[in-house]
Image (tube, rainbow over the protein chains, first blue to last red):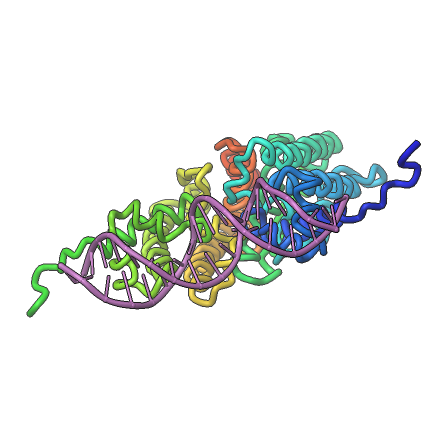
Length: 196
Length: 196
DNA sequence: GTCTATAGGGGGATAGAC
DNA sequence: GTCTATCCCCCTATAGAC
């Protein structure tokens, strides 16, 4: 019974926490081990004792981010609401437009093709798309969206609106484009529900 | 009348051409001067004779890309077509899903906040959004889209679908998501046109 | 486990010959 | 105008003491 108390060796978690923050602020390539060490207060030895290197540390951080993002995403799908209302709630989720999506912002890095890092990221988006597809189907069956829409196309389109909105906000250095794109999507869902 | 013949000093243009290709393939930060020289066949001296440095060369290349992108974009707005058909033509434009948008792929780099580079990029997107907004208005006046939609919101949303589709394609390492998002957008425009 | 010291490689730019 | 040689700094990782 050695580790009765969780081994409160904070350095490992400090490294992960710093990496989570830096992945969001700078992305993978622009995040140097030196910066991680500075921000976490750990030394070189701690990093390479607990992890194989920058990539391994990033993978560990991404898994934690993945858990947090799924939990936040799931909160939008309150069973007390109609499927259409759930879709609108997803669109209305507060977002840090200028920082970008914590995963989506890595889309254009070389790391996105890394065999270890890619599955962590792509599987989250698959989860979003599957969940949204089910919700679109449910809205159709409830008579709130036209049955002529293909659920998967609609779900991927909604996911793209969020990701593209983030990109436009970064490009214009303003929170407005993401908000405008989301409002456009809400209007369209609302309009389609009227004609159904 | 010195330069009767255009001064066929190819090195300057060779550098620009290599930079245009590398900005698309790797982005700004991941594109090193060494790689540019290798790919263009020029030496260090040519780069720093014709340009102040990497950033200045990139700015020159981005301006050329901007001209090309505007020309390609404008082709979608054939006056012989209805405004709605023009919007559908824009959505149907062939795109290199896995390489990403030549400008949009820079959205998450630090360079996007650069005072020289940012205006070149953001002004193109402003142009896209303004043009699409006008076209949405025209479609509404033609009775092909409901007047309840706000034209700017719809235009920004369409732009976001393209940018987000690129991101999803990079994430899933497949051309499919961009195509699926575009199909979703086309279906929705078509559906909305029926109920108008 | 955690630290500091150090190494090897590449990034971006300058110097100066031709 | 174009080239090669060189510089300095930072990135990532390893060595080895404590």
